[in-house]
Image (cartoon, rainbow over all chains, first blue to last red; front, side, top):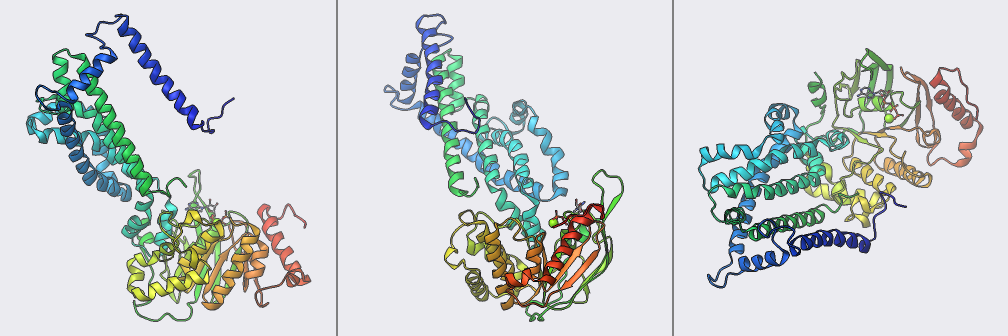
Length: 263
Length: 293
Ligand SMILES: Nc1ncnc2c1ncn2[C@@H]1O[C@H](COP(=O)(O)OP(=O)(O)OP(=O)(O)O)[C@@H](O)[C@H]1O
Ligand SMILES: [Mg+2]
């Protein structure tokens, strides 16, 4: 007997989670240990662990390639996030608040949500070269096309009752947006930011493929060229881990900022 | 077309001018039509309402469900419906000035309290002072004393730092009432403000409203579907018919408040109550079905 609204006890939930991960690791071990799949296609867990250790600290060169790559990727995602929030959030708020601005901008913004962002990379390279600017702009575009419509929708999802109550008290339209609608939309705007940053982590490898120049994407693309599958796995694993960590941190931030939201 | 109507505010007072003790409200031949939901033509909701409120009294507005009570209330200085000409014809004057939208002296209290969940009780009551209009009218020091006094008046002084989610439904409605009264409005519009409360809390709130009103008299227009509430609170009880609505009854009640159960049980009051109930239930089906009590 089960019921979709009945939350599982924490212990049971964790047990199921462990089971799924263990299952994948188990299949992985069987496939590699029995040499069912050649190591050039699928490295073993042990190999990946060793590759991780080497990347984390290279005693011959006395440096950590992984730390360097991670720092660069983090920096790029951070800079692009700041830009996305600084430009995309106000834009979405204006679109959600003023139908004329929405009508004017949505033909430009909405189709981009399903545009092949990766395909614009060559264009960006032609326009902006292969340096940092191109990478940041690419991450920015990839994320902002998701963020802006989500922020607009967050504004429009606020019940009109809040607007009416503020207008009745004598608020100007702008005051009603600022003091009644926007504060109610904040938690969902934060959700939009969380999605946008998560999207950036999926695009980081693409951004760093061109002109392999430090970063996790570069680490992966070099490893791929050397057919070092274990390093490719490590690179992907680290990106997933970073994405998870930023996601959890931002979720925690959201809960701390808007404790009233769940009611 | 709706833009101009919606944005228009009526203001009849310079920022530092003292308010007159009350404003008179005159509704003449007001008709309100709305487009039908199926898009076929219009339906008439209010059908020539005439009403004069010329003293600071409590006016209870009763009527069958969906007859246009909220629509009429909003015409008396609240936010007009969006996207419709409102009123369709006729005129509302407040203090002799035609009123075409939210009026600065009229404040509305809704059934679903519009308290901001992220603000404390204090901040919610002080909310209007975030707006230019009220900042210009009330100096900061007075804002603070008014909020403090209001919190004490509604019995929430010790809850000032809590958030709406930490309050009961009745306490939340007190916050909404305090936020309206802190502006000392001359017209207080209440749309089934206690409709969502349990019977006991509703009685408490009714007593509180009377006390607050005695301390700070203004024109109250109070929509309710509870006939007993109307009889307990009103100087005047107005009954609307089913839409297209007209005012079909207009009782004046002189009994001082608070009104006792004995008074409520007295023959003339019971008769009045029966008559109103018949209006409310009978008129819904144009008198074909009579409900007896
Ligand atoms: N903006 C609008 N556009 C179209 N129809 C509307 C609009 N506002 C109200 N109506 C319709 O007008 C009628 C009266 O609405 P109103 O809310 O004034 O009634 P009410 O007496 O307050 O009802 P209730 O007892 O449910 O509170 C209803 O049939 C409603 O559907
Ligand atoms: Mg109503």
